[in-house]
Amino acid sequence: MPGVGEKYKSLITGSTYVVKKITGKMVLLERQDGKSQVMTELGGLTLFYEKEEETKPHYGEVNFERRKHPRFSVDLPIQYFPMDSSISSNGRAMNLSEGGILIHSPEQMERGQHLRSKLSFNLGLEINTIKTKAEVVWRDTYLNGARGEYRSGVKFIDIAQKDKTKLENFLRSLL
Image 1 (spheres, rainbow, N blue to C red):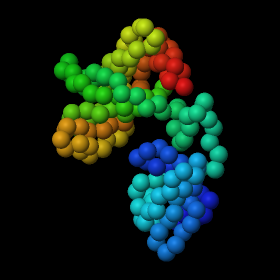
Image 2: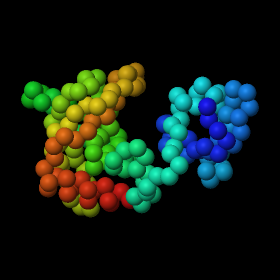
Image 3: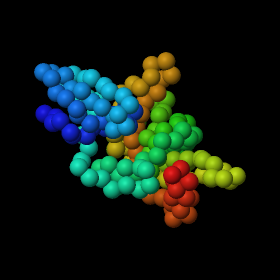
Image 4: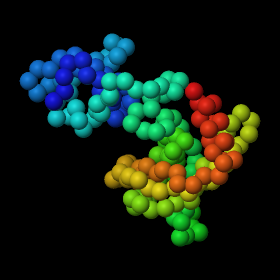
């Protein structure tokens, strides 16, 4: 049961809200900047919002949340291969951290599946490519029927030091 003053983060927009009032089965949420309000049914609160802990460390303006590394919103091309295959697929990296990637892909990946990936990005005038070995840790059902996309969260299980340095430099440039 939520309490007045508790903070919740929208799973859709990432905005943080504070519970201002609870009336019956309805919860009034107000964004921290006070500019917008959302009224939601109590049951919908846990579907669309995640309760935030009391204190969270910050890295610049990015929350660490429950994760080991902060996530950054990106939209980058990624090529990936199942470990036991030389056939590649192309997708989009939609968020990125030192620990993993959210991939939008044309086919559904299996949880526990191991992948090799090539992620490309610009850093200044230079085009960089990093190679990783990763594991699918979660997957979403059909994301967009018109475009045939799925979402999968993958964590890095192996990345060369030179590629890790490129990734860290790229993420710092996003702050």
